[in-house]
Every structure is written in C-alpha cells, then in structure tokens.
Length: 77
Image (cartoon, rainbow, N blue to C red; front, side, top):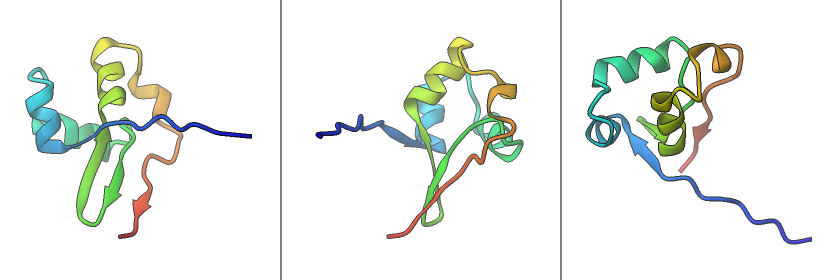
C-alpha cells in the first residue's frame, strides 16, 4: 500500500512575521509558550506550519483547540 504524505511548508518565527503581517514576533511566541500554537523544533529553531498559521489567522484554529495536545516534537539532526 502506497502512502503519500503531504509536505507542509515550515516557517521560523521571523519568517512567519514576514508572511503574516498581522502577527508580531511577540504574539507568535506567546501563542507557542501558552500551548496555543503547535510547533516543532529543529535544533534551536522553532518551526511553525504555514497551514497552521493560515488556519489560526482565518479563525479555523482556535486557541482552545490545541490547548490539551502535545504541541512540539524535537527533530534530531
């Protein structure tokens, strides 16, 4: 059985600020620290899915929908 995984574009916090002018670096970091925005880490970098940010900005992802999930995965390089 062939499985196809969709590759999601990941953004650093600074790239996310440039891609979504309505969000500040402080706002994104607060959402992450509060457990409201899922992310992954690659070394010391925090990476956020562009699709997740789109969903959050458009209102399809609420702060409460990710509150009780484990929101990060450490990637080993």
